[in-house]
Image (tube, rainbow over all chains, first blue to last red; front, side, top):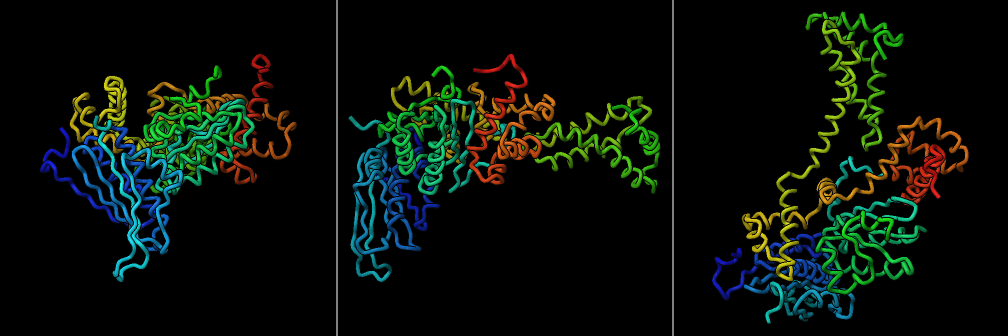
Length: 145
Length: 125
Length: 259
């Protein structure tokens, strides 16, 4: 009997974590990812994969984040999968998430689905550069047949 | 010499515990403790470089006390495997956090894996 | 070492007198100081026996001195036993308690250690049966414990590990840690009158090797400290010491000569 039985079926539980975009805080976000996956009764390999995937996504984004900016990571916990959406405000106008790195290939292996996101700056006065993000999905265990 | 009775402080975030030992004439041993991520991958790289300079016949890396391995750490290990050349590196680890990423990326093929230190240091292998 | 020993002989009557003093006697403090100072070499000698276990000699001597003070205060001559047969175990006991207290602060609660072992065992057998990694609920059901305990155990195994948990786990698996093997070689050396045995070999070493050996065995420095002092890597120090130990062993016992 999993921890999540009490919430209405079909509606994901949502957890948002917002930290300074620095590598030192990524372990905290990893811990949240592990905790959510364990409570959603993911099998141990899936928990390990999600933890590593979230770490990879956050590390990639922290690399391109504007100085003194924030990293936002949102977890949507469904019955059999977790959807993660992380983004930062990039430090430069041409910043992107590079998809031909070793790290990205590892991310593709760990997650069931992963995509790089980019949104040019809106009219907002808050920040100048684009918003750069990564979305990844991970199933609870062996993929549904 | 490493003293098992001495309480060693546990590595904290951004710290990687790295210790070298020479258990016998044939083996050089690097013991790693803590989390290997972007903060600590550099320390691991420096330690592996030093290990590779050792002339011992067999090089062993004990990852038993490693609780997390990020892709940056994996990349460092893979590079070390290539640099080791003829001497295949021996890794000691049972933790899922280390074994799982190595298995799914196929990088476990680059090393000889052992479940514990005694097995890695056994004179028969 | 006995009461008749010329080195301590003069203290015996003083000790008897001290034991007879009333608690508020003004002479107590001065007499106690004289006794502790007089018997201090005993405390230092015992402290040295516990050296090389990762605790600085200074700290050990301090702890041993506390033991000596307790022995001086508690000794009663009418019991018949001579002071040393009472003081030596008192002082050693104080040092042993010091090590135990140190270990205690680092020791993981028994419950968490047992949980760790139980979870590992459950994961092992479940993985085989299921053909995949188990889920937390499956582990909890298998062990017959609440899910919250399994979640706590899993979380703990992802967190920074205390080295004592690590050591306890490896001794659980039955594999000797390398540290124990190396420590055994060190102990072997300590047993011999190493100074005598080392002398001819020290003469054969070059200056740097000789410095390293002296710093290790007589300066009681760790490999890292020696490395810093000599200006080479800890790895190099480890290697040089292993070589020297090897030569020593061969020299001291021709029957165990290797190669």
